Image (cartoon, rainbow, N blue to C red; front, side, top):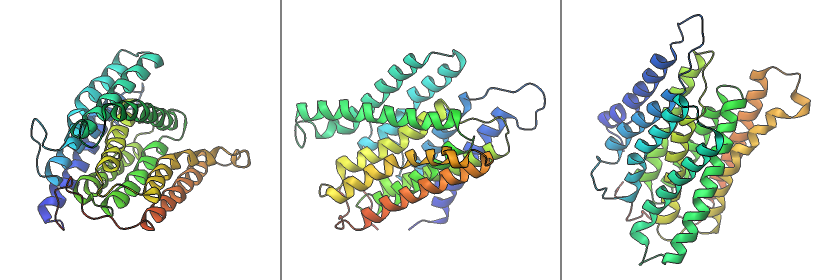
Length: 300
């Protein structure tokens, strides 16, 4: 399935690029005053994913030949939001408005080829509203974990959900534009975990969680719109279960665990999310098999 060059340029190089940007920005070897390098998270994830996508999905073209490529191009305004949000310290309302608009544009670009043919204008309108609000709420949830949970919890949760999405989409007609790309995102989250593990003051909050959410949610939305034939009830519920599985991370905040160390509570949270992701994958695997989608452009 993968050549050695695919593995190198699609996974290894993006991993190294992401990890290098984060380590150079946070400078874990530096002592003294803490350095705020939250701006680096969005740049690291965006750069790594662009490299991976260009290799695994056979290059980038403008205008894109497939609507999922807009995810890569939207990482540019995503980076602007993340960097400016850190440097200018904008308030939560401005963050929410910017993120909501970003996700609304994302859903519109993903749906645009279907409007007037498969989807009516009214159908597109309500999908844009519902999906953009749901995506914004999901980002708020992940960002809350990054801000208030253990520093490695948010990237660990993103890693698990990305792996689940890779299996679900890859086994249901979207090997290249779903399985490969979500697997690449999981590799990037491994790089984030590595950088966070060696940097005591590291945080993935802000732009980092926004870039990961944009890639993950955009790819899942693309899959739901373009899986052929239409995703059945089980597959749709599997995706829903996958997306709500990060809520299980709050298991580490149970009263019975308050006397445990932060690492022990974090492990409980990660294990709970793992169970949710595993349940989503199992539910998806029990759904009727999907044929390779014409939107995927990949022949095994």
